[in-house]
Length: 478
Image 1 (spheres, rainbow, N blue to C red):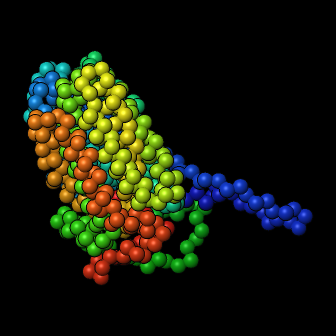
Image 2 (image 1 turned 30 degrees about the vertical axis):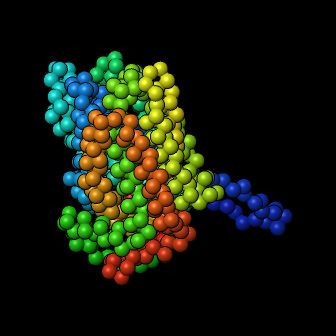
């Protein structure tokens, strides 16, 4: 399903023909803006991500008030990561078959209800680990659906797909600013003051997100083919030939369709595998980060958020600089360089000393990790979006999320168990594993450079029902 902006031909400026005595002036090139619909989408996405950040920063600290077991802290991440394994394909299918903006509004309100229930338990001092895990699972399911629908909406609201990397850079930078500079420090500081406060703020943020997406929905028509003509629309010269509707697909068929799209496109398959492996390593390394920072290194809860500001600084610089670096050095080199920086950051955090210097050294490592993640993540998502047909991106994203989520909770629990043995070891394993992935798989990532210049190279095999679209003609989403 696609969405288009309302026709604004009536407001388009016109130019009169130049006269012989008045030479035409050459206009100064200007970089086109991404448009008001995109700005509204960003508002909804960032307020939603801010709510997620308040919950995810505060939840591990809430677990530490119940138990000091690092496995229980890791289970907090595992629960939230296991939800996509059960709900990923459903969320992707919904993003393909439902009004994406309405889906975002609904899931934002569902999260508000979940947070309200958790607040009732907190105020009555009745929170238990099972109750917290159930609330996190419900919240994660709604969040996953919102994220898939919002990511799939990015090309819908862009004026030109050449701004795809820039658009994702803007979103990535905004997320890093919020979670690194604002949400992270405030969530931990507010939790040290009152355990209820971060969750109350998160509830207010998801309601604000629903309001922003409602405004966006009013700017867009659900389908350009069914939009009623405005008085400024030119009269049609001939009745268009109706396109037969595609038969409805079951969730199993959509899962299989996502698998086929990935499998029949070798460059896409390599990028997906690369991203999944890096994500698993990162999840393993930081699964029990709250235990490591607070209980092992001795960083206070109030300072913990300030340490994460370094992650935000690095993430912002990575997200806003990635398109310039990619243009100069190539997408593949920039993406692989980001993974190396991620590895360096994890190694530095793992080597942080116990005591007064722990926040400073850990902040340096988080800065490097944030910078590297900003580079590789933006480029990987943009490459996937250019490779997949528009109407199949939701199911592809759901398929990838499902595969990723089946193994990520296991990685998180393993990280918690390894933290019991040695709290530093998971960070070192992630660093070494990331470098190994770059060495072994770096040569397979040439498609990241080729996809923007030769889209026809990525056509699927003859068994696939569609060929790869031209990015200038169709709006891929991932």
